[in-house]
Length: 439
Image (tube, rainbow, N blue to C red; front, side, top):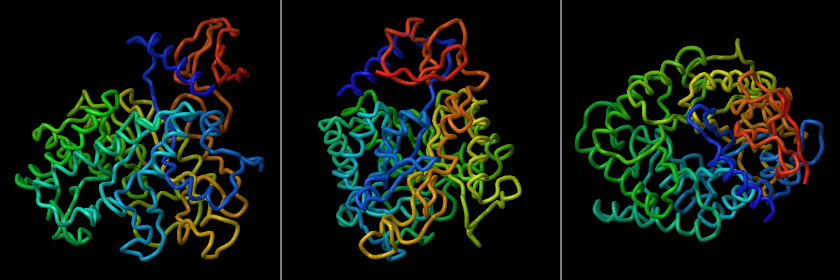
């Protein structure tokens, strides 16, 4: 309760203190959708010095300078993936997400809810319609899109886990709620190229998205709606996609992008090109990087579009340097307002041993921010706050972070006055230095 009250005080101060000439409010954090599963198997989490982290959610808020977390939601999670036939982390049903969302909110962070509208992974090549919805007509599907979204949001609101941001779909570059085997290109909603003109498919697509958006506006009127794609390496494709949304009168607030440098291109080339061209075409839509990650080991033999190892080796140091550079790059664009690391909680397969009783996922993706052997944090875990102006890895404040004149600032850059005794407990910037004020 005390943490919630402190958060309310800070939010009130933010609403009173923000002016047009003050810093842009940014969000930094991670998609922690599998954390409760690791916790269920008593998987240890330790800081970089080997000290046990009792609760990664509160640790992220208090020590990593995160102010947001993202969580995915499946309709009826399949648990065993229909393509790979193993455990791929598809366990997030509404009850699971409600509990985790409440923890995020109680830690004082913003909560980004990621609707997958599927029983398994929804991504560019898989947007399968949920099994329970497959017999529905198109008219019934439109109605279900609205009623399901509304029901989920109402459940979260009633539980004290109101989302602050809502993704209506996950990586929906090639469509949403596809019938048949959507892994086959001929079954996609956009059968050849999603950015060709297919009026009938775009009409269906936009209607479905607006059904989800309508539910968000009704149940969570303060929440911001994100439309998320992954074609970040191709600015022409990105601009055309959001142009089509505009033509289809889709209701949303924020452009959401996945950016993985090994798939989408260089920090100093493809990414800036996409960001600047998207902003030029849609200047009223902020942009958030809702997914990013980098390998800490075991560079894959195939499936990679760009070999970035000469700049960022597949090591924990290379991973950390990538995140530091990404944060620095994104801070150059005041319309980029969010940065989320995907799957930072990856910590081996879960549990102390490889056996059927302690497996969270089959195999390691090797992009997490914890060492799967000794469970210590990699240095990259402490880098995400640099997007807000605070680099916890280096314990430094960036040049453009607020400072001076004896004023205490929150990590979001909001002035809180000069009287230390009137401030709630938390982390602040004071005269150019980061300080902790205890209760």
